Each structure stands twice: as C-alpha cells, then as structure tokens.
Image (tube, rainbow, N blue to C red):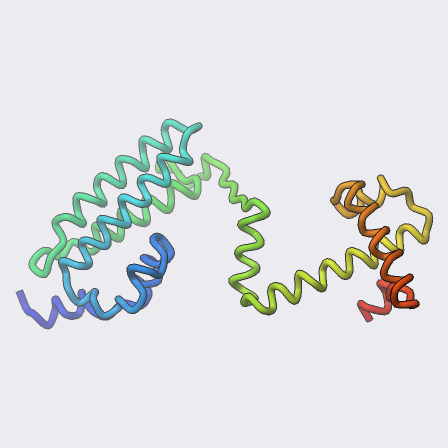
Length: 207
C-alpha cells in the first residue's frame, strides 16, 4: 500500500472533529482534528459514533417497525465496514454508501421507487429552543434580549389593559397565566407610584 495514498485518506479533519463534538460534546474531542491521521483512532471514533446513532434511533423509532428494522440493518453493514477500515483496506465508498442509505431512510425514502413513504417531523421543546437561542446569541446578549422581551411583555400587558381588555383575554393573547398578568399589572402600578412616571408605550419602544 502506497503510504502517500493512506495519508490522503487519513488526515487532519476539522469537520469530523465537529461531528464528534455534536455527538459527544467538546470535552473529549476539542482540538482532536489532527488525531484523525491515525486510522485506528478514526476507526474508534466511527464505531463510537455508530453506536451513539444506533442508541438514539432505538429511543425514537418506537412506532415504525419497518424503519427500525431497515436502519438497524444499515447500521450493521456500516459497523462491519468501519471495523474493516484500515490503511490497507479502502472501503470508504462502502461507508459513504451506507451513510447515504441511512440518511435516505430517515428522510422517508424507501422501497426503491424514489417516493417519500414517511413524514419527518422535527420538534424542539421550549427548553431546547432557549438553549439554541442562547448559544447563537452568546450568554450576555441572550440575557439582554430576555430582559428586552420581558420589558415588551410588560408594555403589551399595560397597553391591552388600558384598552379595557379583560385579564383572561390578555393572558390568552400573550400565552401566559392570568396570575402572571395580575402580577405584571401590580408591578407596573408600583413602578409608576415609585418613579412618578408612566410605563413607556409599546409603539414608542419599538420605534
């Protein structure tokens, strides 16, 4: 085996480092892009990734027995090829093929007819949405924006109340509890008494 060819296959790989960080976090793989020049390390990482993917699919594919079966077969083939991967054995295209096959099935393709046989639904709960927002914005800006959103909520509650909208309707419109609306109105009242100022208008703040 030509060593230069092996070096072309196993080399510094920042994208693979990022994939491993997505799967396992930064703690174990931060700064490890250069380690992928070692075929043994690549194999270990790939096998660990396949196991993580398999475990995740086992958790979520509980209502579709065929998809669970097909992805299991594909992962078995992928795992087998990864175990054979080395400087001497170049089965990269087999590995790529199995990964594409896995993606295609997870996106709903099946039965070799080019049609989508399953709908795919991705969902984040509120906590996950907030974590994404925090990571994108950075901690300081995230909390600044939270304060801004809360300020706007107070102004909206105040505006709706001044327009004689009942508290239960305000709660429904803003997606908060009636108790929360009552507390906000009480805090607005206390703020205006202490400062001698009216709460800023919502339109003025947005302008």
